[in-house]
View (spheres, rainbow, N blue to C red):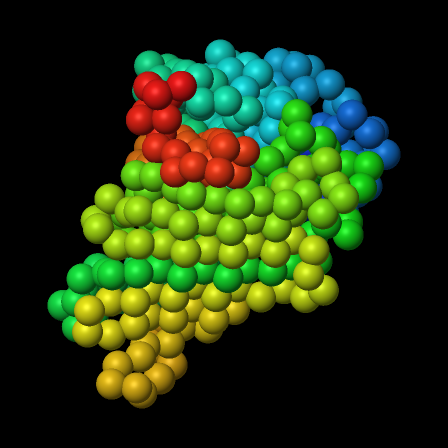
Length: 334
């Protein structure tokens, strides 16, 4: 851990589109110096470094990036199948980690990383972006601090569409061994927000899915029974021609609506915007706070396990056409 007068030395593993987003936020943080940019495509690493971290070392091998350089933290933006080994390598060097989702390719690996984080006293955060955005922070406040005004949650409705399939040909996202389709990639954000805002998880799910000419699932419909007694209905459309996200929380006395990140309250047939929004943060700033203060972030590694369980149950239900238990219930039955 560096002294307070010296910036944290951060390595960036993966220098594609997502890595660029992290680099932009890290560069803006005066507590951080990007020390290494790593990507198998050296040109990609060099381009990112030239724009955001001219003094950074360039590596094409993640083991070299993590093992050869003095780092306090790494931000991992590589394909999912590489995450487990990269997080383990960082932990073994005493390095804290912010990792893009999904955290790892399997439940056993995610559970092992959670155990390693605890045993090795490291920090592991997952980059679930929406947990740090103002609309979702506000929604959580509404259904916790103002819960009495809304009453108990009865139903959640989700509709998400995006021009996603049109851009995945030839990428890892269209490989069923590396990705879980539109629901697993983009849709996991909305399911995570339901967990974050309501504190409820799914007990069982019923799903249908279509690949629409791709190798992975593109359009998925889900029904779920939540732990607090509410129901959930969701529709994820990955071959649309525009982006839209609606998440509606229907409670006994009032509704809370997220419509393309606008927050609204509805009661007695009157709908009004929520204007006293909670200020936004970012997963990168929260991670740096956590590294310095040794306190967990809003998106700890445990949230990745819940998302893996959801995704596994949805895919299994889509294959079987039957209700499927989520999480440990799924593991026990299978």
